[in-house]
Image (tube, rainbow, N blue to C red):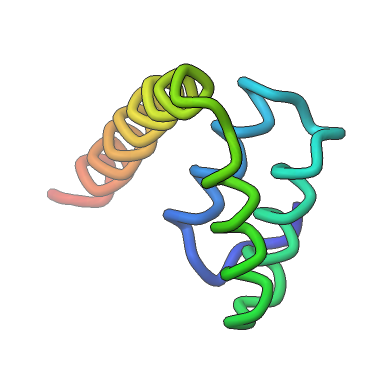
Length: 84
């Protein structure tokens, strides 16, 4: 995946890939939205996400929460390594 313009969407995309797979329609839609940052692609990704079952959405939310925690921890470590 190229460097995302929106790290939050990139974390969501990773969580979706981890839960439903990198070959799923929702993953392709969210990845397109991450890469293009175009309104139409974001709306398509939202529609695909809305179509998921409630349990799948909960599973994705749990996974993304873990990914965000890891992201925040890495940032804190990087900042700590730079600080005197």
